Amino acid sequence: MKTVYLQNLRKELDATDDSFAASCCNTLGIPRDALLKLRIVRQALDARKKNDIFYCVHAELTVGDAAAKRILRDPKRKAELVNPQKTEPFSFGTKQAEGRIIVAGLGPAGLFAALTLAENGYRPLVIERGRPIEERVKDVERYWSGALREPDPESNVAFGEGGAGTFSDGKLTTRIRDPHIDGVLSDLIKSGAPEEIAYLAKPHIGTDRLRTVVGNLRKRIEAAGGEVLFSAKLADLKTTDGAVTAALVQQGGKAVWEPCTALILAMGHGARDTAGMLYDRGVAMAPKAFAIGVRAEHPQSLINESQYGPMANHPRLGAAEYRLTARSGERGVYTFCMCPGGQVVASASGPEQTVVNGMSNFARDGKNANAAIVVQITPDDFGAHPLDGLRYLDRLERDVFLHGGGDGTAPASTVGAFLRDEASKPSRSVEPTYRPGVRYTRLSECLPDFVAAGVRDGIKAFGRQLKGYDMADAVLTAVESRTSSPLRILRDSGMESVSHKGLYPVGEGAGYAGGIVSAAVDGRKAAEAVMRIFAPLP
Image (cartoon, rainbow, N blue to C red; front, top):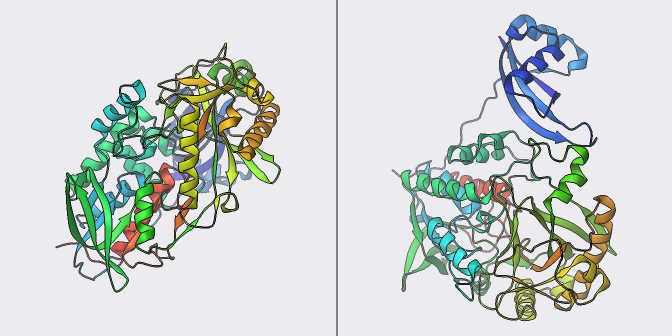
């Protein structure tokens, strides 16, 4: 019995497990009973020919010895024998910790840092300024429904268990290549994510399922000995001889200094007050490029037809995605965080802010598709001080808030009016999904000139790449401003702050990740860096 790895197997859209297995055997020229087990390693949709869409599959096939020899002898198969991979045992440190290991923040980076520490015997203290996921969802809904004029400052789309990614599409695609990815996906599956995320080329969980997964990850941390405190904010740091020795934890009107040996900082990029505190304490950081723009909404049916042609209504295809890029002078313009069948959501984390983002459930069955259209921005645009990017966003988000009327509605425009740079009338065919509502306006008035120009150039280019993208009645809503952190907290190759020993800045807020998986990997690697120094607790 042998297991062979094969690439580029064709799987029809209507294939069942049995029919695909039979097709593989037929393709390989082996009898059906020779195939003992089939495991899909990767599955990607091939929609290059709109009248012939199928899945391209890489798979491991366990077959009898005679069948394996036949497959491996055929050079056309490009098959290779699968050998069990040997994993090197992790080398734990021997130094005894003099204080607790603290994880600040319970987004993807913090969750996986804390989970890794807890399940290896370190019993971390986890502090999260927001509330548990169940309470957080209710707080956010009150804001979206208009029951609150402004978001709860400590429980919103940015702050709370699960981080900003909890109110998203739950995409798990990443550009990084790292052996930790498989472990992260495995832990997500153990905590309730669908098993298909292990092999799909573009996996997603959906915000509805992700909320359950996040809660289950936290329960695993607690079951393994970790302590999780909610509504607990990192308010200050104490250092001795250049090393962090204590963290001031503010909770319920009380502030307590918690001695710590290591502090994994997973603050997320919405925590602007925390960034200011860190700067005041001399933590080394630098400004970083990011991107800003608007959210675009189109009928999902238009995107399906543009991507899938005559097969657009096939039940196995679901809602189509896109990712588009262009140039506006020297700046890059691109779509970001595309949410098929989703909605545009209010993502402010403080008073007098208007911020938009995208979200979709696992089924992706909403009428509209949405994605950000964003334009690159660099420190040359906003300043060289580490906090200048945050200050720039503070001003921008307040200006957009006022332009929307100062009542929580967001400024919006049809694509046609925006391209003509004139005041917009309501769309006749696309109903905006943003709550509590939009105010149609001349959208360029609340955007920097280079951003408005970049979005226009992008829409025109995208219309040539994806049929119908430049439809006049598509809706644009401002402002998409939190694509990534505008600063980077500097760290060395061991993931430790270059200015403060014992401080491990991780994830999106620290400027080192760009999504759920990359942030989770970053958090796990930081936990391992700590574990290589210190011994597990007795």
